[in-house]
Image 1 (cartoon, helix red, strand yellow):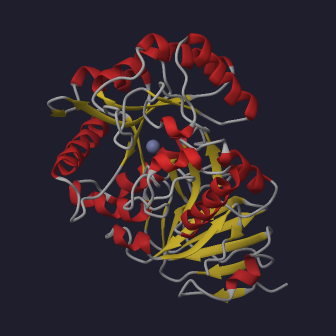
Image 2 (cartoon, rainbow, N blue to C red):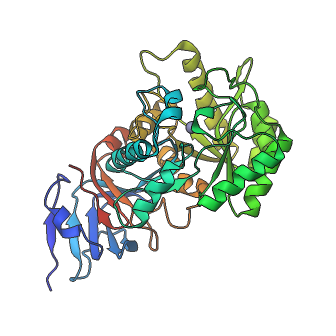
Length: 410
Ligand SMILES: [Zn+2]
C-alpha cells in the first residue's frame, strides 16, 4: 500500500477524515519542541494506537503503510498541561453563585470549558476545585470514549467554615471532619486532594496573607490522603501558609506567592525547604491588563521575581492558569498567558517546559504526558512556524491530537 500523503500546510481541512480513528499514522513538521528543548529541521512523529511509537528527528518518510500528515513549517509540541483550572466556574460570573448551581448545569459548563481548552491545545487539565464533584462526571464521559482532554480532578477543595472557596462545598474543620472529607473524596475516586492552606482573592472575608489551617491540621489531611494513595496540593499565597504546608508534607503548593503583609518576596530559607523536599510549585501565571489594579500589578511583578528565584534555585516549577476565576481567565487562556512570560525574562524553553513536561510531572503524569517521545501518549499539537523565536505563535494552533485522535476544531 502506498504512503498516503495529505498536504495540510494551513493545518485546517482534509486530514480530519484520515486521522479521525486511532490507528497508525505519522505527523511531519518543520520544527519541534519535545517537552525539554527545541529541534530544528523536519521531524516525523509516528503514532500507533494512541501512543507515540517513534520520533525521527531527521523527518524521514514513515513506513509505507502509515498515512502521513504533513504540516509544513509548523512546530510540533506536546499538548499543553494546565495543572490548575476550575472547569465549573464561569469566568464572567460571581464565584459565590456556584453555591446555587445544579449538578447538571455544572457538568454542562465544565464540558464546554474543557472543549474550549482542548481546541486551544491544552490536552491535559487538572481541576483543582469544582462543586458537587461535577468534574468526576465529566472525567467518566471521557473515559467512556468521548473526545476531551485528559482530566485529573480534586472535587471540592477542603476549606475552613466560611473560608476560601466555601461556596464549593468543601468546608471541614477539626481532625475528624478533615479525615472524613479525605475519605469521601477517595471513595468517589478523585485523583488529588486540594486543601486551602491560606485565604484567597476570590472569597469575600478571607485574607490571602493569612493561613487558614495550621501545620497540625494540614498534617492530618496529608497523612489521611497518603494512606489512600492520594497526593495533596495546597493553595498557599501567604508565606506562613507555604511554611505550614511544607511542614505537613504536601506534594505541591499552588500559587506559592510568598505573600506577606509587606509585599511579595521569596524568603531564602523557605525556597531551600521547597527544593530540599522536592515539592512542586504550581505557579498560576497571569498578565497585566489596562484594568488590572495597581496592587495586583505589584503582586504579579513579585510573582515573576519569585519564579526566577525558584528556577535558579532548582526548585520544581510548573505553570498553570487558575482558569475560570475572572474574566481574564477563560479556560483557553493558557497560550496567551505563556506567550507573555518572555517579556518578564523567561526563555521560550523555560516557558514551554513549565507548561509541558514539568507540568505533567507536577500532576504525577510525567511518565506519559508532556513529551514527544516514544511510549508517550499521542497528545500532540502543531502551532505556527517560528514559535521558537516568538511564543505568540502558541495562539495559532493548527492541529490537535488527543490520544492519537485528531480533534475537530470547527
Ligand atoms: Zn484555583
